[in-house]
Image 1 (cartoon, one colour):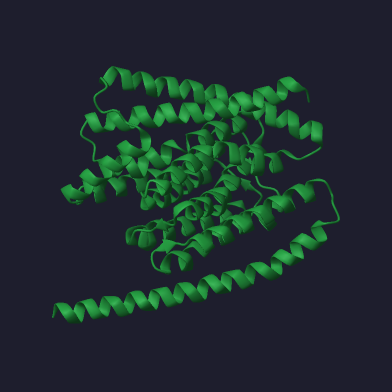
Image 2 (tube, helix red, strand yellow):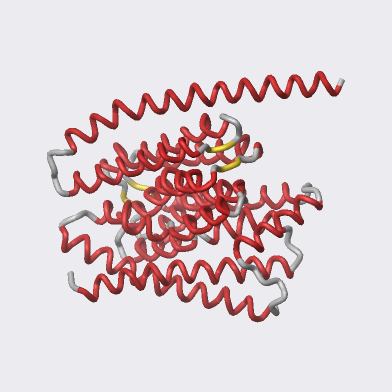
Length: 371
């Protein structure tokens, strides 16, 4: 490893973030000009667009034979999106959660996570598995479009303003200009993904760290920067529901589209190691399930819950680094996590149940008052 490798890694990350920004801005404006409902722009272009780096990196890694990077990028990004990005966004301003996300999108994310885990039990996610996953994202997008048709005009207009403020969309720009933005964004993404995969692989080999760990940490965090910037900016501007929708939508896209396409284009599918089955997939699934009691507690993610999520992420990354270096400290970190994690999950479950009971009581009171 030399200085050129580090420079390539940094340039790759910058290209990914910049390319995603161009892609999101251009696509959102094109959709607006073509009369596509703004709510669809927010739930698809914003959420899926910020996942474009994961798509570029994982597909490029799969084509290059670096399946560990492709898998680690998806799983690591989903873990980081929930624990780090939602946690940081909650710490910045707290996060509001719409009931439609609680009732459908989060349960769907849990189901898709379980399906991906089941597909991995034979240590490989093959082409058939990838086709099934990719078909899922097409069905989900179709459902979003169908749901958007029933949205009220005032909600649509409000979402338009939110997306324009959040993404800096300039609707007065001509159509050709925004088409060029999309094309430029795609080119920059491809270049950035290639630089990032190559440099990350070189670093892994030079440091004696597996490609999987690099994919779960450096690459995963780097490609999650668009989600981090978007969600934290939304939280700071008071657009707290957009931050949650962006993360949930991105995680769904990562599993169904990114992992699906990566396994389709890979000649031998995506190999899944026993380490991933024992640690990374379960962590991703538990982090997703924990969202249910958290968001039921007042339909928001509170600041203290954000701090806890970030703490869990730091423990997870610390364990990965220590384990990669064969440190004896893993014998302390892992048992401690096994003790603390269930206690915190129980706390979330209790507070979530209390929040759900309050919601039921308030709903009953509102019905009684109306009658």
